[in-house]
Image 1 (cartoon, rainbow, N blue to C red):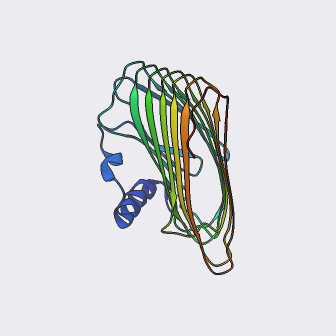
Image 2 (image 1 turned 90 degrees about the vertical axis):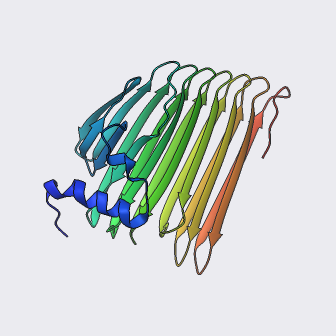
Amino acid sequence: MTIRINDEYRVLINLYKREGLDLSLFEKRMAAVIINGSRILHLNTVEGVSIEGSEAEDGVTAEIKIEEGVKLPFPIHLCTGFLRNEGFQKVIFNINVGADAEVRFLSHCIFPYAKNFTHEAIARIKVGKNAIVTYDDTHVHGEGVRMISKSDVEVLDGGRYIGRFSLTKHRAKELKFETNVKLGNYSSAEISSKVKAVRDDNVEMKEVLSLEGSYSRGRIKSIVIASDEARVNVINEVYGLESTQRDM
C-alpha cells in the first residue's frame, strides 16, 4: 500500500470519522500533535501549553509543558498514526504539568493497515502540586500489531492522575502494557484499562501504584476479555507505607 505524504492528513481525518473519534483534533483552536510514522504532520499550541517535537529515523519525541495554573476547557490531542503495512515506530511523550493546572490528554493510536508492525510508546508524565491530569488512550489496530507501551507517572503533593486505556474494538495481537505511578503526600490516582483479546492474541499487562506519600491513595481496575486461544496475563500491584490509604 502506497500513500503520498500530501494525502496522510486527509487519510487520518477519514479514519477518525469512520471510528467515531473526536474530530476536534483537526481544529486550529486545539493544542495537538499529529504523527504519522516518523513525521510530524501537524503541531499546534495554545496559551499556557508548549509542544516541541523532534523527528528521528524511526519515530518522534514530543516535549509537552503545561504552565502553572492553566485550566484548559478542551483536551490536548495526541495522535500517533502509522498508515503502512509494516515497519517500526517509537514515540516518546515527555509531559510536565505545572502546579494547580488542570488538563486532559486525548491520545489515539491509529494503525489500521498493520500486518507486521511494531509500535513502542514511552510516556513520562509529571503532575505538579495540586494539579489534575486525565490521560485517555484509545487504539485502532490492524491485524498485525506488536505494541510495547510503558508509562511512568509522578504525582506531586495534592495532585491527581486519572489514566484510562482502551483496546476493545480491534485486535490486541501482541500487547505488552506497563504503567507505574508514584504518589506524593495527599495525592491520588485512578488507573483503568479495558482490553479484548481474541484468536491467538497475547496480552501482558502490569499496573503498579506506589503510595510513597502520606495519605496518598489509589485504585486500579482492569477489565480483560479473552476468547479462542488468546493468552492474557494481568498483574496489579499497590505498595504503600502504613500511613497511606489504598484501594484496589
